[in-house]
Image 1 (cartoon, helix red, strand yellow):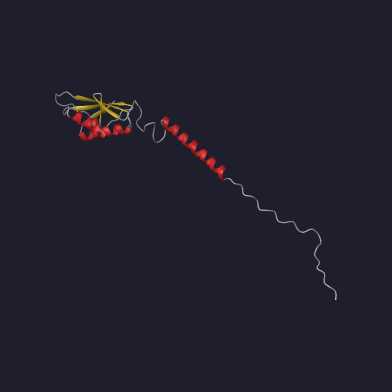
Image 2 (cartoon, rainbow, N blue to C red):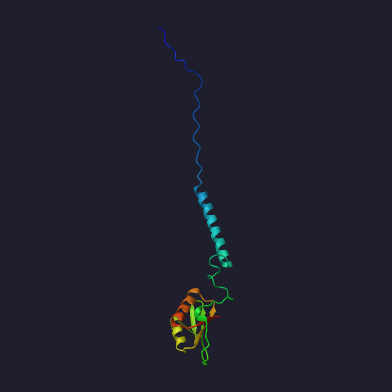
Length: 151
């Protein structure tokens, strides 16, 4: 009996399969690129806001135009019968309310103006006032029932 020969080819073994492709690490580069884009967009929005465009419409909000004047219902001044109108001068500089040259709170300024009489009109001079201080003063004058003008 003869042995059966395995007929296997005697050549070189088949080449191994190629290794899987390496994944490129994009993490740090992608994050850095996105961060630069976000910073650029924020700088552009800030520049537009300072120039007067966009939702804030300027450096300090909507009404920072020195030529504009606000109007309100309390600004309507009716002439009384024969009595002369008395003006109370209040200056708002930054976050400070000044009356007769001294610093005073918005509520105290409204009370002092109210003591001047029933026909008093408050003249507010806006000297680079902050919006919060102006709103506080206007609220105090409205609560006291005093008409005012803003110059």
